[in-house]
Figure (cartoon, rainbow, N blue to C red):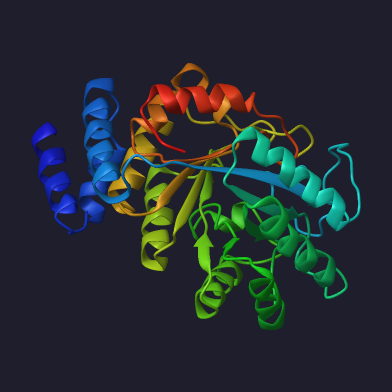
Length: 324
């Protein structure tokens, strides 16, 4: 297996690609020595194509709860009784204040997120103003994650200064109907192609632990490769009480580390962004994720759950030799 890992690594380092058969062998490994060797080669690939720079991204949940979609992992869905706090769209001042806090934490990017099927034209002026001010007044790169959008809305947000848009595929196409039935996987794919048409960077990834098989994780990674995404968030399910997936058992640390390394082989040039669920699922292995190919991090908390102190994350990255 070590010889195979090195052979594939040399090919990827030379600009070639890993095959599905090779990735399948890697994803099925179940012992730490092989996983550590895979992680080491994934680090070589990361250093070759993206160096030692790491992005820190902070989120603001700018419109929470009462979402019409029924994504089974999400505590913000109106279909489930999760007892989270709901509130309407924040005003620009509130969003900008959150961006200032994010910059103090060390963030370089700031993503404005709303819980909804798609962006309302009534909310568009508020969000465009927020994007402009985050960039002009705070100096962070503004991103958005607003669900399904129209061409006109994307044009307005891009004109305001948005350069990247997040729209996660979440899981493989074969597993998607088990997770959501109010829209389809193809709906999400169409949005990602729409983003590329408008010249926007694509941020799209998934959640590990949604009942998918290892092969379905690979299918997601190869789909993201075909889309040539700039950033691929890798989240790990943190089961939320009241959701259909509340009893799911998330993958263990070795499974997560191995998956990150395989994703790096498949997506050698992308930002692999470690996101939600990392604290509770990786526990003391968080640093290993960055020694397996990750090079981006969400800091300061998530949409409905808290993260750890950003100072701990920045110290971890400095200890690993990364430059923010």
